[in-house]
Image 1: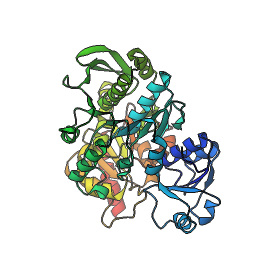
Image 2 (image 1 turned 90 degrees about the horizontal axis):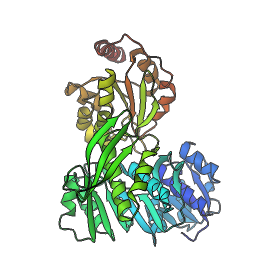
Image 3 (image 1 turned 120 degrees about the vertical axis):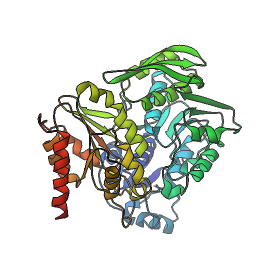
Image 4 (image 1 turned 45 degrees about the vertical axis):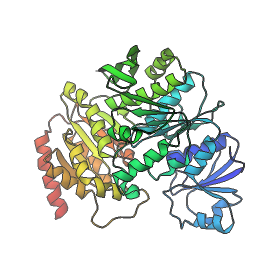
Amino acid sequence: MIKQDKIHFVGIGGAGMSALALLLLQAGKRVSGSDLQMNSYAQRVKKAGGKIFLKHCASNLKDAQMLIFSSAISSDNTEIESAKQRNIPIKHRGELLADLAKGRTSVAISGMHGKTSVANMLAVALINAQVDPTVVLGGESFDLKGNACLGKSSYFVAEADESDGSFLRLSPTYAVITNIEAEHIDFYKSEERILSIFKEFCQKVNKAIFYNGEDKNIRKILCGLKIAQKISFGFSPECDIFAKNIIRKDLTISFDCFFKQEKLGRVKIPLLGKYNVLNCLSAIAVCLHLNVDFKELRESFKNYKGVARRGEIKRKDEIMLIEDYAHHPTEIASAISAYLPIKENKKGRIISIFQPHRYTRTKFLSNSFGRCFDKSDIVILSDIYAASEKAIPGVSSELILKAINEENSPAAVLLPKEKIINYVQRIARKNDIILVLGAGDIGDITKDLIKIVPSHKLQVASFKQETTSHKLQAAG
């Protein structure tokens, strides 16, 4: 634990920042922080005893002894400038995470997708096995009732953020790598650079790497890499831990779990999507290595509650409503595919509502976004959620709309966020599945979507006519 007692966070409403703030509060530190709005993460910190300021101002620092910032904060931020002038130590959140993990048996969860779900699954399993780990998550866990907890053991479970390269500050005991692909291109510039940085991260792992054996990029960087142990998980019998006989029933998935060709037993999780089987397998792999009993693992996953905005089911009646954090084409395609069996069973439609996240991601991956919705029946796009980015000339949600139309995929329309509810009310009908996708604030509309009364008449063909009419009206 750090020696300073008074720590100030710039951007405390971020998922990762608030988790670190909560850990420090639980350790008896005095915490303050600033952000532009009182979101759920900031509210949780305030409830735990943190002081929250809803603006960035030099006076917020008061008697702070350390300032923590994230890559989302610009270097000319007034609070950072003030800290420099006052010689207050300044640390990136990745550096603070590394400090907190130092001297502990740490498990760093890395990869482009699935980090929060894997970290939560692992944390839940270890807690149920009375291991009592410290946990830092990038999302709200329904199991932990928050995104952080300070445990009494030496075990430390945390997400390793690759988006800005800050995970290289870690030297974990163990690491999980879920997947590696083209993402955060604004930072890395090329896929070759991504592979190089991940290889460097792997070389910093002390004891073992648990990796997705289905991922060719991971296999590529691990080939020839000298490390104590490399343990693979996947669907292939060539993996050290693998799943067979995957069955979806209602809103659960079950599978036979094998370790070194030996069947350990059947695992059931109240989630959908084969990607969640991989997530579960990775957590099982780590736990078995740490000598957690398999029977305890099965019970942990059987009663698993999950993470907010990760396949979170908001409504199940005449219309099914799911909110998912998916914001990359691979994540979106996987999320949609997870609900296809339900769509086929109910003979309904999938309506995907998507808010693109960041101008740079939209710019670099617009064509991929055009293809990832091909299993949706209807796509409703919202304007880009900028996050910390400045607008890029010529980059808007129109790029994705154009790409979808060029692929001749589902009917698609672009609407301001505030007009989506009324639009969905006009087109939704019984047995539809509505997916609310994106890493921004698009989830705000779910509270109103829950109230929608389905129509029993409207067909996709009429929706296409309506979208054409809407475009003409917008153009006029």
